[in-house]
Length: 282
Image (cartoon, rainbow, N blue to C red; front, top):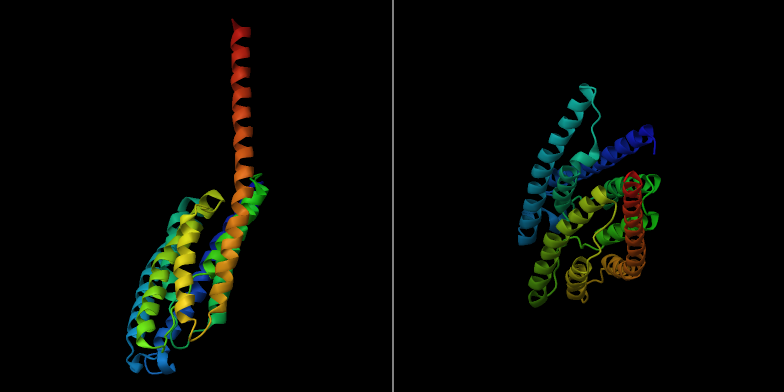
């Protein structure tokens, strides 16, 4: 891959993360500002415990996320002013941590939540992963591994349930609230880890712990809410995530083992060549 293409892909990756932040931050900030007295049951003056927790999480997410992203924007600006190239890969951890922190706020349903705008922001984040996939393919890495990883991470991100208010009977309401907040608390960092791993290595983490945790937590949310409303979105993407995982693992094992065998053969061949050269020198 040429240096020009590398620079273009690097800029596109930074742009994807930046637009994700700008759009989601703006949407969440507007929701927090407009919702104290408006938003029906999601308004703060509705005096519901859920709202206090949701708005607190959203506010903390916005504050921490803005600090992290502004710091990154400043670093990019300094590099541009200094005539130096800012490489995303060298700062992938900071970008992925910032994106994950902001996502906590995105998983809280508040008054004036604009789901369409949120999906646009998530689209730019997914776009950054696709750019990484293109970079992996153009640099000669395994295309199947890169593509399956993007699909798996995208499906997994969609299987994380958003926290909603529920008015079901108290015996189910408390476990439901606990399960949905717990799902966000554990699955959002899991997504952040997947995102970081992919942006660094070009491959997702296909260990069974993450999809099993998703199935348990997202499944609990769907099951507890079933009598009030069926969350088809989470249910469908949870199933698709598990299907993708089960279908991908055998393929990846085969391809990675094949790659490993090729590497070992190449290593053995190079060792034999070195031995031959040594004998000839003697």
